[in-house]
Image (cartoon, rainbow over all chains, first blue to last red; front, side, top):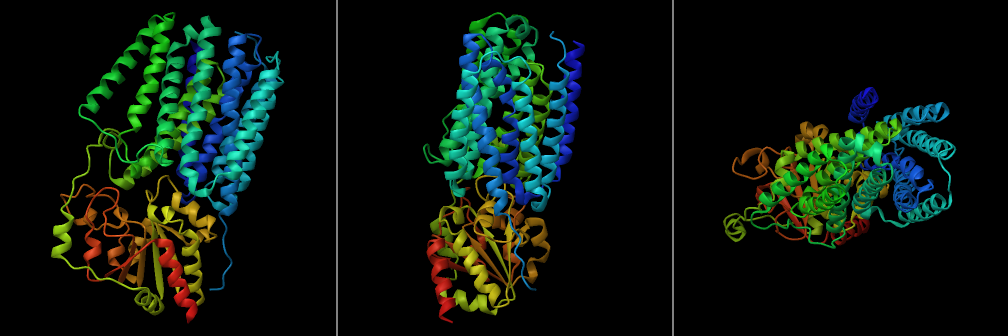
Length: 95
Length: 459
């Protein structure tokens, strides 16, 4: 039970930090924000890895599909975020 | 409870910090890419740390999953055109949520005892996960035009949805007390899948920014719940970041539409139809030709362009860039006014214009442009409709009354580039088109702009 409380602390504080940090994200970058948080939430990968890497066959199958799905998000999400961010340039122009 | 693996936990702490720094970078386009590198390093550390933690005893499934996933993810990132970005975002929420559901099911089936003791978290994980999977797939289908983008509604829809919702929640509560009931567990998951479908089907295309933000939030919550279920703090942290990001975006989007979540989720009751023919009969419109437009633009000192979903559909962003360059060469100041819900996802217009190589400091938020609108000589509305509808300010009976809009009508002249006189997504008549300072330029946005550019080049 004390462990559950500990996890709740983590949840509440992380949610708070997230709120403060993301509030400051410029609206121009809202799409990259979505794809970036999507890549980051691909962290479910670590849970999937443990399942796929266990000795239990059911876990291996479920874990395999989960690893595939989460990897698509992590790899694809970060790559596409970078691709988008590269486009946001500031032109030097004489005014 | 296994002994604490200190190196792994410390790796996770570092990863968590890097994730937060990564998102912090997004506060400005200049720091954004560095921020993403932090987040990538964080992810790499977390994965390698997990692989080396000693919990892994077999590798073949892991390696195949990572190889296949990387191949698909890379292909999607490289080959997907920017115009398909809303779809890509939608489907990636489905993947993330699917992983969460599967990890949850695995916990339930294999680590039975631990799973039973943490049933509230596990239940949340599979509930949110499952409805996000199908909800996101529906959103993907709508954005990809696989299913009709219009709201699909039937009589008694809300009753059915609410009933489904309560049955599912009832099962969840039951499982907290009787976690060993496998049949109920899987029925609950199945029902959540159904809820996801029913939740998004009645939501129309223009409300997609809210749906995508909500799904973003749910996918994060599912990941955070997974963290509770498998006692992993980095999952909770990353999940909460994702969850709060989706939450904030949903708030911004619904504020920009002056609608509540409930209204968006349950409000698809069909749009009121205005008698178009009658209105058009009563009030004449002013038509502009390409030459007229060129002449008007030449006289201007400051031009503001308001892009909308129509620009994305016509793929006109490159033509828009070219036009802005032509005008700038003549010493005319060109800016872009971007409404938060223009397009099909948060930031949609910004990405398209950035892709077309328009400098990000030319992209202005609605609140920045509005106070100076009366100093704008020409406001060009390209493929936008509801976000410039002055009825939102004046017409109490209008469905969009109260929605913040870009005050295009306050500009000295408004040129509306539009396919036809059809209404916008909301099906609402737009009085802007009949104002005396409004000129209508009909045609496909891309073709018209190209003709206009050619006209300018003629000299």
